[in-house]
Length: 110
Length: 115
Image (cartoon, rainbow over the protein chains, first blue to last red):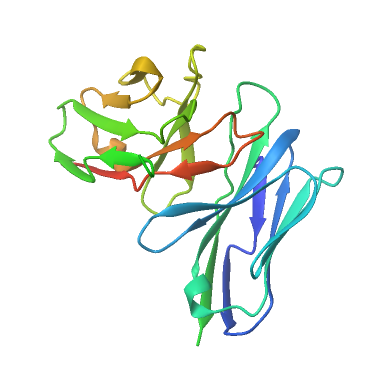
């Protein structure tokens, strides 16, 4: 079983729709990051969270440490949100090792 | 610098040659990470440097891969006797501290093609 499972793997939606991407992990973590990778390959760190919820513009990230689950939400989605979103837990064991989900490819159609 | 700088942006090399990839992290960032992303695949952790501590090399796929970080700043990832399966985008990221407490910033990557 992979340490990190993201769902869905691919998601296509219409502009304006509310988007949810889920991440479940099986390891003990100290923090979790959500990354955004655009088609050109550049990677941006969106959120780092270890509890509760964070909001940045139209993006919201939540985490439930007990249930080992995190979600990334996008409100009022826009075509420029089209990217691969990657869940990245930072595991407790070892020196800050990161594990990566395979990513969710999001396509927002106008 | 203002961001994480990687060079070269693209590298094509012949199988069996050695290559060096450079990462210049954000000034003051003590943590530096190397990852790679093969075509159509997810991110793969390679190595992690934190300050003066011994690096975490647990992600290096073989002994052909090595990395060093001089003076706690610039890092070089060296791949010896390159193989076609080494073809990937090699990404560097830096963080003010460990990623448990701080976010991190990625460079734009080096696209390595082994022919």
